[in-house]
Amino acid sequence: MYDVSVIIPVVSKSSRLARTREVVRRLQEQRAIALEIIIVMQGFDETETIGIDGVKTIFSRVFSSSHSRNVGACHATADLISFLDDDTFPAASDFYRRVKTILDVGAVDFVTCNIVSNGKRLAASRIESDVQINRQTIIGNMWEPGLTLRRKTFLKFQFDATLGIGTIHGSGEGFDLGARLVDAGLKGKRLAGLEIDHPPLPLNSEFDVQRTFYYSLGNGSSLVARGFHKAYAKQLFKQVAKTVLYPCLNRWSEAKLALLRLACLLIGPAIPRGVPKIIPNQLAKDLIDGEIDPFPKVEPRIDRATA
Image (cartoon, rainbow, N blue to C red; front, top):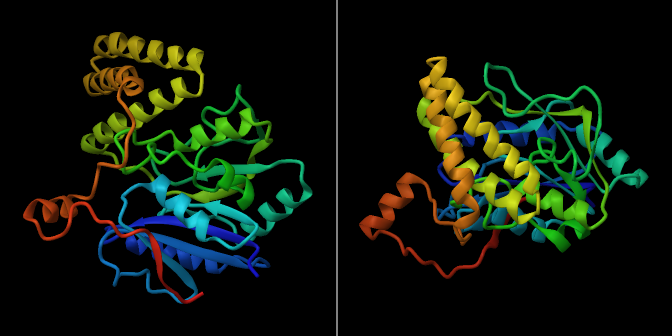
């Protein structure tokens, strides 16, 4: 019997598979805890796996990180489930033992953690003390990597599959889920003493533009959908201020990103959400070339499991 099921969405043939294998190995080094490691492989090549014994692999032909997490949760067997990205892993070997102890006490229903990395550009700001997650504190403290909660609780809510990587609204799924959990009366906490490792973000303009575009669409849509209108207005004001200030400081690249974020925040809530439409470049080429069926009818299934 497993103590925690850890679910990781992975894109088939991704250049990050080497990092994902490191994630799995780090999970297997967790002490005094029995982990069920579930990889949800998004792609059409069902011969490809992580290649590490003891990992359950589920194949899905839908390219959506949120949908993949939901699929993984449906196949999980532990009472507790946790979510990681394909490039994040616990910094300490007792991470999940401590998480389980905290949740077993029953004072909180879900936990998130610190995301740490080395580099000039970090994925998230660090906290030095625990933060109770509520509608006043949830922004900037709620995300998917490291999120752990009871499986039965998650299955009542689940991630919104129209948010997150793989969709036009490419972010906001963690915030959206957290807001729904809080609104339902559940208690959450971001724990400063629990850390997961995240690689530093790339320092290039192409990455900045793509991240700003998709993330801002999702941020704007999820803020409005969950009724955070004051926070949404504050974000709009900040971007307006930046578009005015940065040109005066001759910081043109930042001014352009601020203008892009402002535009995406504005149009994000107006764009209808839908099923995932963004797919890897090579798969897009294959679809255009007619090499594979663009509308597969195969449901996600467990093709192999060595666990």
